[in-house]
Length: 504
Ligand SMILES: NC(=O)c1ccc[n+]([C@@H]2O[C@H](COP(=O)([O-])OP(=O)(O)OC[C@H]3O[C@@H](n4cnc5c(N)ncnc54)[C@H](O)[C@@H]3O)[C@@H](O)[C@H]2O)c1
Image (tube, rainbow, N blue to C red; front, top):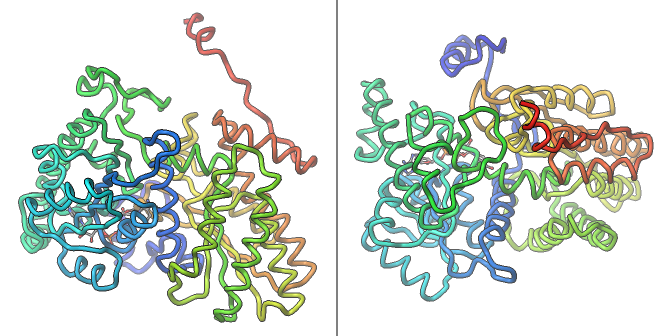
């Protein structure tokens, strides 16, 4: 879309006219792989969030994670909570969604009464249970009730669909599910007011918990953005935060409007994964055979274990988490439809795994071609200032250079197809995603293409993150130049802030 015509209302209009659509990115690249990607990503996020709040050697046992949404993506949270080993409470307002998730074993228990919920959570904490509980009701009421009843929340987040706040993405507290559906259709202005009032209440309750030590993060659903648009008390410079004993520190965002809370990419995925080149590499076996997928899993484990022996200290944790994931992947039984797999790997890991697949296809160990791709939620390819690129603070998070460069660079370097999308994940007009698909058919040409393209695809993102002075990315850019002497990346010169401040 032309930028001036890329607002939410424009999407409704031009979609109705049939001239454009909102395809999201992963499906748009013909690489939708069912719930597996989101379960893996959520597990990695929770494990790393846990590491942020835990003492050395401590795990998530007995710790409480409160969040919301049991929908398409958000429904992965309870399962990921169980894999990560905590107590998960996930509020969901739609009874049908709750019962579907429960009957399909995505969540262990269902509770629809706040008093019963409080008692159940206290018991689970005491026994250090690993359990996931769906609360049938509004998330705002849970935040408020837990504050009143002094239930300590270790980790807090939200995954209502706030990228689409006025048309069913967020249900305001105080209204039933049906009342909300009626109001959004018949009194849209009143409904908008109710949503904004509810967001202000939710934020106030979250602020009370974080004052007590809860670690809250935005989960890529535009919560912070919409709460701020609703006038909620959510900016870092507010007295609510500045008057605390330990006020949250600035992360370096431009201007006065920095949020008091970080998005999960700013705090977790960005500095721990993306800056080091780790992101959701994925593949699909075109034979659709279970045996082929099992062979690819075995190859990936072998390659990663080999690479881990030589890996620097900085990426050991990511290597271990992903070896553990791929070893348990078949047991977790998350394949729906395509025989596909996802794991987080860096440029070296992706290229080595891909090369081993190509050899196995050539040798007829794998019966037909494999398609490589990646999620939008990655090191590079997606420019999304409140999500994928939210830990870039030099101003370039508001440009779409990287998505466009990745798509162009990937196509020149041998991608089989590329795709460029407006709006994937966080909403129309808020993001540009660039994706690719690459077919491996066991030929020498495929081997050349994969080396050239995967190297570019990851390192273009690292270069941009490094120029924004992200420490992990500077480390990774230097490492990439050592591995490929033809690569020349201009590294940033770090300015001493004190010297600069003295000049003005
Ligand atoms: N972090 C990530 O990796 C990631 C990945 C994908 C999607 N997302 C974002 O997460 C959000 C959710 O995605 P989804 O696919 O699950 O959407 P979805 O619409 O399928 O699910 C959201 C659910 O939240 C429920 N809900 C809304 N308001 C509520 C309230 N006040 N209290 C309780 N429940 C409420 C809805 O009934 C719905 O079932 C989206 O904004 C999406 O862009 C994040």
